[in-house]
Image 1 (cartoon, rainbow, N blue to C red):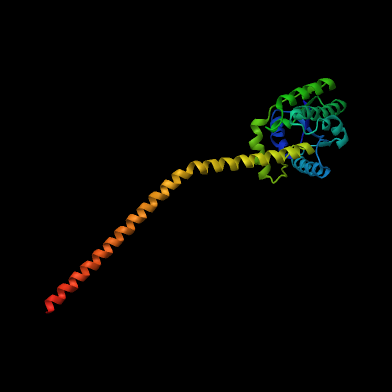
Image 2: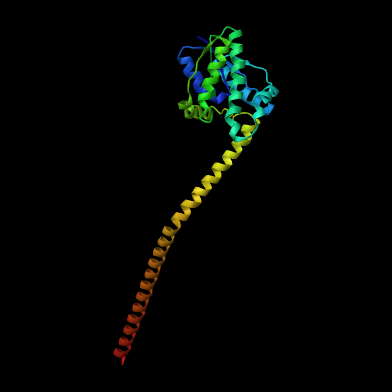
Length: 244
């Protein structure tokens, strides 16, 4: 099957591309990600993708970068945590519809996506939107949950020195990712403090035992010193008496 692979970034493409090629698909990558903010970040991820694809002999199709279209479709949900899933669904739909239309217009038989590599994405929603986009375009939906390959993709991308972003892509996700990292740091700090507090009585008991042993050793040393001094004095006294 001639397959268009929608790719969000280079690192997330490593394992899906490998597995789909091994399955016999003829693949072209579609970089269609108007969600990415700011433009410099979009360009950085694109360059990383192009360098990797070139090394693999894989063609890359770049869609138009249209942040306003994304803002109109997905950005309207804002940063309300309760609306995050809806915002992500709208984001998936915009990008996958774009890729599906391109695929249908250029002779591709199916569409797949690398979005399912990340354990932080809404996997079921991606599957639903991919299926719907392909149905509208009249092509096959090639859905696969690539989350089991996440750790290997992470390992490989680090080994290759790939640029690795620390947020999904949009401005909202950048703020949310920073907040979540701060929350995890706070949780780790609280966990460490709780462990230290729980261990404090044991450490105090251990320190008390060490102090007791040091006192015993010092008392024994002092006792031996007095014994040696007394013995020396007795010997000196005996010697003096013998001299008389």
